[in-house]
Image (cartoon, rainbow, N blue to C red):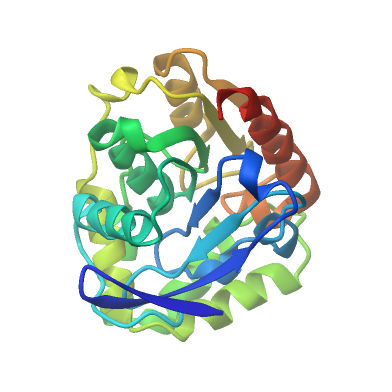
Length: 259
């Protein structure tokens, strides 16, 4: 693990430098609400031949600072992170709330992007009132409920158990702020302005960001590719790690000629 001070906050991240890092765009992985960089499968964090940065957002994982309750505020953290690392362009890979951050980045700083990869996210992210109130009133029970909602029916039982353990390590106030940020996010009228190569990935069993959310993104963003994974839930990148990693690898390879 490495740390960097960006915008006055100490951020924790993991970096993998592949052998082709000088001729391919680096990837920056942005986790979802209540998550950390370990919500990304190891094979993606160590994608062969590519440079991959996996970031803990402020107040999450090993990062210091406070969480946020606005997507635009997290977007400014990511902007500071890539600028501090002196990355001229990158490919943002965002899951759920991280996907909203990536979309906001694409709208605000399109010149800094070589591509977008959006997993289990949407142009608008409505959050069930039951989750928003439950996180503050009965965090343990709400985390258990979230684990059910976040995974497909046929997932390895160890995956939701690990999800619960990691989420319970986080301050409930930070988790609540994340979901408030998601609930406030609405770029349905704006995503058609995104003009960078985009890959959209979702699972048919996603209860939190249904397939219709991803289909809307793919329809609105010109030239976007859509990958729908049968039976996968909201944590598709962990539930179907080989398929997701392979799709991302092929997408990133297709962008090399733009370097």
